[in-house]
Amino acid sequence: MTPRLFDSAPMRVYWEVTRACGLACRHCRAEASLARDPDELTTAEGHAVLDRIAAFGDTKPHAILTGGDPVERADLFELIAHAKDVGLRVSVSPSATPRLTPEVVQRLAAAGVDAISLSIDGSSPARHDALRGVGGCFERTLSAARATATTSLQVQVNTLVCAETLDDLPAIYALVRDLRLARWSLFFLVTVGRGAVLAPIDSVQAERLLQWLASLERGQGVPIVTTTEAPQFRRVVIEHGRQVHGPGTDSSHPHGGVGHGVRDGNGVMFISHSGDISPSGFLPLAAGNVRRDDLVETYRHAPLFVALRRADTFGGRCGRCEYREICGGSRARAWSATGDVLAEDPLCAYEPRAHFGP
Image 1 (spheres, helix red, strand yellow):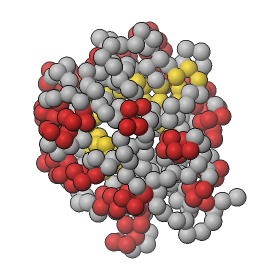
Image 2 (cartoon, one colour):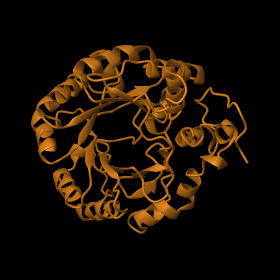
Image 3 (cartoon, rainbow, N blue to C red):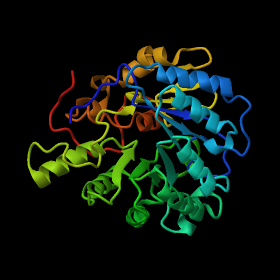
């Protein structure tokens, strides 16, 4: 599959509508709290943000309302309605708190939401709730997932990948498969926010995990597997396809086959609860703020975003790798590890076969 350069518009815009959340997750990027921040964008400002997302052009980005917990906002359904009115596809990432009732799930579906994401970070209540910081979270997550069965909602399950969860991933996959959910997305730990207290896996462990993911069953009734902050999965999928099916089968495998080239700042944009415009939620460097800067112009022309779309300027192995346009490494992890958004991604174990740099 040919990689895409998303110069004109992102594929996905994540808007952190609030940092309020009833959970206390040990890895929370947002460092969420129980109370809403008085500086979060108002309803009117939210409408303006959605208008500008729609202004990217004919191929409008997919808007993902995240948090914190979006359900904490009393105007959530008003925001969803406005997004639909301006022609946006909408997904929502709720937290599994007592607020997420089957009735709320049904209401999200009725409002025209395409998909919701739910987090499962352990295959048992004890393992999952230990990371989420609140008892009963595991069962509420399963209840919400089951409540979607009679709706049109697609469900993506997000799972944290770190040293603490690594051995549990096969059991979590089996749970997701048995629930017959659409997608399993593995979030490879970037040590930002509260996630700094957890231990990441190393590059050798990551490579083994990605090889296992690429070998998983595919087809009807099993979830598509994707990764967040581990774009090297695309390389692994391509190499796996060549080994199994022979040359010329780069896109034959659905796992990892969506979004070649998408990475922080290239196809992805993040808006914080207070309006900061960043390349992703895991790369908390602000290139502007929606209260004073135009969203479309910031994405297209801000030096930070422009630099992140130039894979040929990346440092180390990322910059000289033959897969650099398809992958490009996690820019958030490069920044977290080195302070340089253009440095190589330390999670990757791959040694490029040839020098493709300048």
